[in-house]
Length: 340
Image (cartoon, rainbow, N blue to C red; front, side):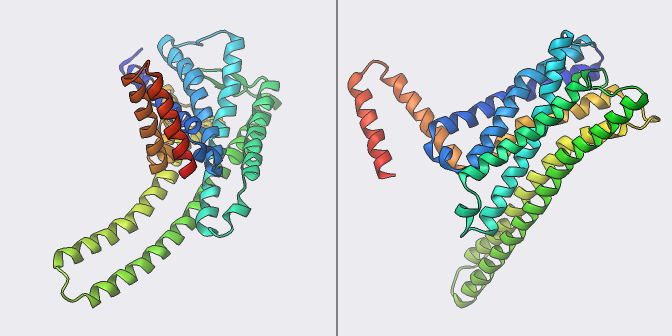
């Protein structure tokens, strides 16, 4: 191992730890909150977290071992299985992000008809499609024996065939796979979130007009209050743009280098550097660590659930064997549920 590969290995370890803990927290919120389970976005979020956890537990360690040993980490059977899962889970995560963007687009652009346009059944259908889509390409790669260890990426992943008609088939497969997974998801993300941004800016403009009219009428208002109002206007405009940029930008930064590299290596005159191949693979892994924060944990609803869970754990630590307190907590929880 050279110094660069040591850094890659450390990066995968850090990303793996953050990804596993953060995605487990998302699942914990889903289990402890009936409100999150009832909401349609919770279906997409759970599917995304589930895929991220599998990538973290199975594929990241395999790539780590491949970097350290500089050879195929496991036997052929295990490596083929990991390649199948890597193809399946990567496509599934992309489509899950696209589904989340569609849900937010409908919620913002069509708020009055959201309950009819995006039902729980519709969400399950979309998740089933993402599973079927991903499974079809993974199974196709398995049937054509295109799943193996790839030295360039130090991973068990799609392995290009060399020459002949099989090479042409693999080229067609790779182009179609990335077109219907990465490009389709990216187009959906751009369309939906730009529509959401347009609506958000329209509402911000209306609020700004009302604020300026109010400030104009309040002649005796202190200058510091006016300054704070204007600063809040500026933050409100930047907040929506910042969120949309994170959603679209993180998707492009994490997946585009790997997808472009896989497409470029199909050209006979292109030779991919191993270090660049590992970097592009590490970027795709980093998406598994950033997704929980981008889509779940930084939202107020998830923060409240985590605080509630921590408070319950602290109460149990303070009163581990008190039957009276346990029954009292149960009664209080029941009353809170009835009130909510």
